[in-house]
Image 1 (cartoon, helix red, strand yellow):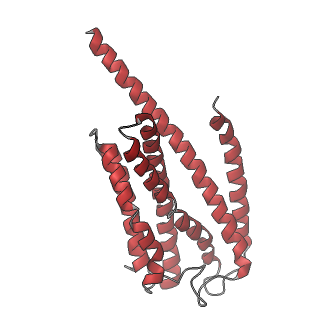
Image 2: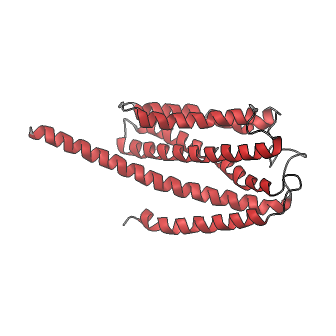
Image 3: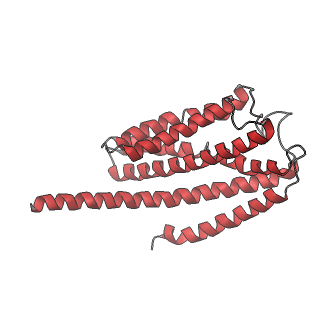
Length: 238
């Protein structure tokens, strides 16, 4: 059994323990004065949104490595491609949760589910770009699919800094950054513990899912390669 397979159960237990601590911190943090208990969705919105800015860079890095290695080292290129697919799927998952929890927050705070605010619009674009990446991987059967996906992954990463900085560049409806947003931003220090525990919890959970998905994708690549060799052998026999 590979070392990674042995570590998976331990990693899962660690993730679940930290997530349980984060949940307890989120549920026992002081109640917010204006939004009441509904504000606790923030403890899930914040970590998923921040992490949804991180995983796309992993996809971008893996896409770059795929382009560098695709002719000189196909084995490494295949690993980079598998990592790019895995990191894209985690990006879509976390961005979807960020959008959903943001809409819950918006409904409670603004009385509307959605507005074409600078942050919300660029964040929706981010989601659409990575959903497009997965659709390309799923629907295209061309031999150039991995190449096209790598180019799209690099292009999509351009939206990340724009989206991240949008709440600093354009003061529209979305609140200022929680951390580093100036004197009128921020949260009560009594809520810090819940924020950081949940950020660590969902970072670990995302890394665990990423590792599992990467291993599955590598197995799929190995099966496809074996099927291709079997087909060639069958043609030679004929």
